[in-house]
Length: 192
Image: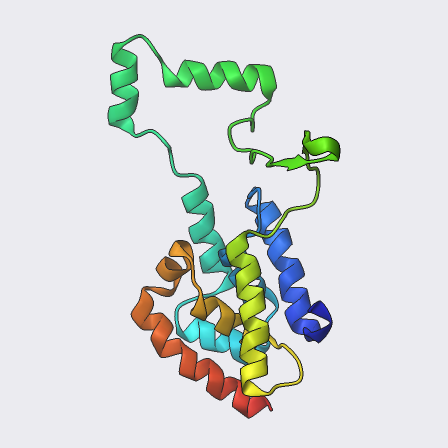
């Protein structure tokens, strides 16, 4: 399928992996594919997304902030402290034993090796099922339009057709997504 992707669309998918790695994600999600488009999509596509309030910097910042969210709030920390568990002491102990960024590292997903035994993956970051679906939908969008190659606009149409919870939030809701689809089609029509 990737042989049908234009150079720009292919590069955007590669950038998605780099952004996922930068965000310390154990997998490539739909939002990482969106980041790839924002970083390396055609200028007209990036301008369309900027008009919708999305830039690479703003989305990266939002995803960074989401990733740093504290799993336990102040009330939780206080409740644990009342039974003798100090979260700050636990964090200091873990960082002393395993390194300062131990709690910020992604948890590698187990992979099945020979005879079904678990093994841990190193540098490769896999696509989630939703991200793969977006790439498949980009092919379907191109075929439905009778376009010969898959451009960045087709990938965006795939995202808009099957957004996950995070991308719906980034776009500002399903109404914004519905408004954006015809604009992307018009952009692809102009480029053809």
